[in-house]
Image (cartoon, rainbow, N blue to C red):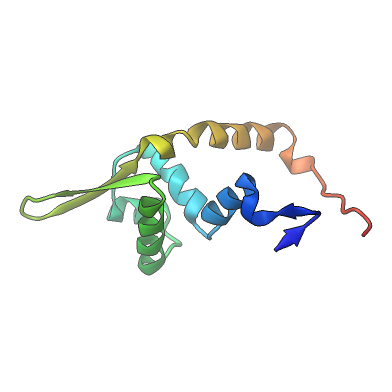
Length: 116
């Protein structure tokens, strides 16, 4: 797919947006940034509108991307917890910038489309 002469497959921003733009992904990451090591039920509690199937799927995707780490403790009962990886933690600065932008001007920004 091409847009404005730029190959989307070669664009690093496109790649990041493609990975993080799925519904709930950014909110799940935000929960980890606020609380860190969490169990599945704690994430559900923080995001009560998400269904368990989608949460499970998003956690798997985030783990596959290396943004979170899944830890299984072989005790009785088995305890599974999730935490941000170093790669995931590096996104905190991006979230801080989003928050600052939203507070200072993001709400008043209007998108102007170019005439084609």
